[in-house]
Image (cartoon, rainbow, N blue to C red; front, side, top):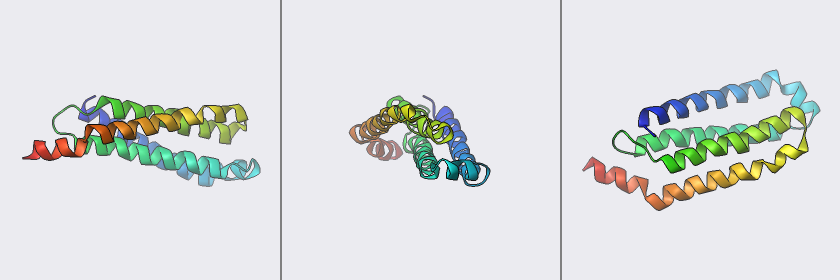
Length: 129
């Protein structure tokens, strides 16, 4: 995955996280309060936002044009599965959607494990010398 693509995904998804956070706080306030799902929405936004920033961090920590594909794909899958299922659950109240959420959590964990195991920061430091 190219750094340019990773920066585009990361910044676009970060923009979306901020927009969805604002939309949940203002545009969906009554619906989320009525369904008692404001906390669910906030959790979705938090994990969405953090992992969007992680995509940008991957681009920043990796030298050259290419960035690590494994962690990036895991973070993208986690945002889609974890946050996406929580957004849908908060909007619809369909409890079955909660069964998808742990798959996204596992994707986040695998992504972070890949980052830890590959030692991206060490590669970035070596590349800077």
